[in-house]
Amino acid sequence: MSEVPDLTSIFFYILVTGLPTTLILTVLALGFGFLLGMVLAIMRVYGERELAWIGSVYEKLLRGIPVLVLIFIFAYGIPEIFWYLDSLYRQVASIILALSLRSAAYQSQIFRGAILSVNTGQMVAARAVGMKKIQAFRHIILPQAIRLAVPGWTNEYSVVIKDTSFAYSFGVIELTKAAYRVSVNFPILWAPTMLIAAILYFAVTYPVTRIFGQKQNKKLKELGIGGR
Amino acid sequence: MRKQAAIIGMILCLGGGLAIGWFIPALFPAPPRVAVIDTIQSRGTFIVGTSADYPPFEDYYTNNDTYYGFDIDIADLIAAEMGVTVVWVDMDFDSLVGACTAGTIDMIAAAMTYNTDRAEKLAASNTYVTVAQAVIVKNSSSMTITALDNLTIPANQLVGVQSGTVMQSDLEALGMIAGVNFTTYPRADALMLALDGGAIEAAYVDEPIYEAFKTTYDIKIIFSTDPEPLALWTRYSEPELLYVMNKVIFEGYQDGTIQDLIIKWFG
Figure 1 (cartoon, rainbow over the protein chains, first blue to last red):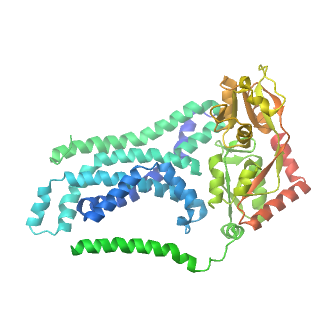
Figure 2: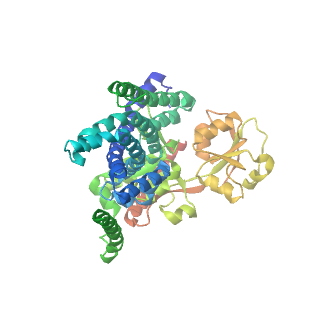
């Protein structure tokens, strides 16, 4: 074992080897979760009774299952669902799938709330000027709903980015695993290394919640469609 | 009303489709089996799972981003025999058996001792090295034991092991309960820190772990077991890969390669 590295080089090691993977996992999980969550929200708000019921059951079910259990189900329980992937990528795929499915449940709640908080009179008015329901949704409701959803959505981002650390035990070298590797090499640096990992997580979480969350709140208030 | 009927119809069709999809595969003959050794050779990479936190068997060196250790060299020998390179998947020790069963990794090389529990799930190679297990204490300790079940005496119960290892199974076979009669630690170095800090009185570990840490901490062996065999593991459905693994182990002993590696890593 060579000499103990200084904290700056540990910081850059974790930054370079760990952070990109963590961010990629987060973006993919949030992206797929956004698509599915949006569909579920629309199903719940505008769907017929049965569709709304499916959406609500999905959301209640997925909100009640720990994401680690979901990863175990996809990674070791039914790995055949990724038969088309090389076996090396199956675990990553199951992590992304589990995170997106879970995130979709929460995001559907965020978007459902946002769609409902746009005044119903606007839909009526849009229909009155001759828009079809889908046009009214696309051009009147959705733009406002997405803006309204941003503050809540940043909260979901901060949850997902921290949950990517579950990938650590599945052979994905993300931020936590990179920090863990440094600590295994130099047990004396266990505490400072994990502190660096904590700082990095904070550094990518806080600015987003700050800029998109609080600034958006202010802007919504200026626009007069919500915010605190 | 028509809309509702359409939606109910949709749901029924979905359910019906799922049900049919469940049964239809049984009507077709199973696709021809592709041996994993062919996949390895066409892909050019041999995916091996390990838990790289267990020097001198396997560790990951962050200074130059390389895996190193005894098991790493053994896996490289097997890959060289097949003419491919190793891709390491570094995961939790506890997760390795699941990952190998699920087909994510082709082989486990993680200083895994042979035992019947594991052999029910996965196929073991021939022994590639044997290690004894040892009970170690601090040099200043006055604790002595003459057999492993001495550890069950209440006065001796501050014992620590690494979780998921055969050492844990050994203690459980003596009727001890994890978290009650002994403490488990996820990693060897956490175990050593606990021993050094006085959280536990004794640690039950593989003997090479003692060799690796004896210069760092003031420790001694008070009891060691007979050497136990370590094996590499793969799935039972892959006899071709198992054959190559065993061939490399036997030939490594015949031409002295493995003996050289044992001297290199265990001194």
